[in-house]
Image (cartoon, rainbow, N blue to C red; front, side):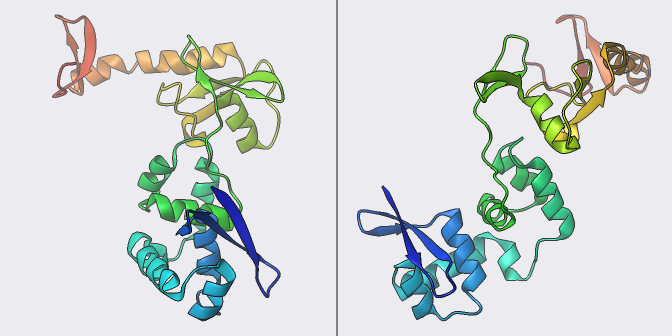
Length: 221
């Protein structure tokens, strides 16, 4: 597989990914096509991308079907902000579900915004947290996400709390910075104090056979 670039008149490189003589459209190529679709005719776009005119027309038709943003539903400032916030912390499919977009639409918009939606490589430690290697050293992914969100380094004493208690959900919306261990412990214990009210309102129940709490109406596992 080889990446070929065709220089366009506007000094912008037109990306197209080719394999065995067939065009394989990438998010970069789709974003380029969308940027120039209104100002350039199909023959010019075909020349820039190194494909046929029918390939250009077919791809535009396909994009119009899969991404509502091309059909007049423009991305809002709020959606762009949410995409920037979630990028890299959860999968593209999860971002698309939260925004009500397609995965292709999210990838194309990310390219336009200059945002990487690729999740950093890492592994899950025995304590349940995602670890990653950065500049030759190990770090916990949720702390890195929080530092990026805050725009500063975390103090060693600060702790990052997962609001939904899922340690692998490192979306910034699910993270909260605690000033220390005591504040972090208070966040966890505050949930314990809600149990009596949840039982009284029959939102949860205690399964005596299994010895665990369950949501009312939830199937056993």
